[in-house]
Image (cartoon, rainbow, N blue to C red):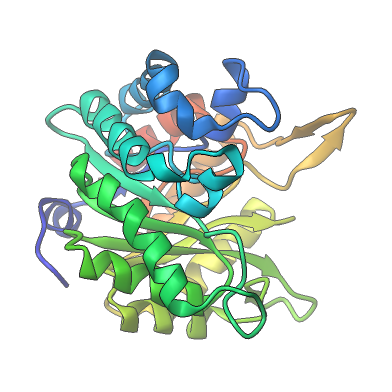
Length: 299
């Protein structure tokens, strides 16, 4: 494992990551189709308030508002040339909110296409996309690069290796899994847990795991956690479950798991061997406050 302050702290104790960002932005007025990444400069106080709420909830790891911050994603809003600027601004916002004891996670999501031969993007083109985003995140002071919500191990390999080339102090890689008919967990591309994690680790990831999931219950996330820990071996595992399986109510997506439900899951995740616990879709600062308290109680 590489050496960094974040990784040193992880060796000492379980860490808590934050929760959903998109729904928090929407609650503050982000319109459908609007570029949330632009809020890092145009609505910085709103983004800062979200980060501070997660920090106040006890989260050790605060994620930048850059899931859609790749040059390819920003190009849809005519902002491709501002990729470095916007990602750097996002990381600096987190650093301001995190303070002395928090860690900035530079968030890198999928670049938005498939690699050749399935898609039209070459490995080198994708590598350049990731490098440009990661450059801004590192200039802003990211303690680690979080490559998240991935479905293709080949894309993870490109993103993780790009982060290593850019000098990231640490790299985390997480996939989105779905439960198959045979009860196994696979990515959208059909990769099982063992293959997905093996390739992320070989590419240079220091921490591996999962965030998000398709129609998965909290019990499913617990089963996934066990598979992740087995597949990861000596490499630390992160898990950021959704607040249960979503359902549609009118025009809204609803997640039913309460902060208490999520907190009750925490001791079981710790028992399974998860080292970093956070939340994904549907989770709020209230959920993370309850989960953070559960981590502290188990220490």
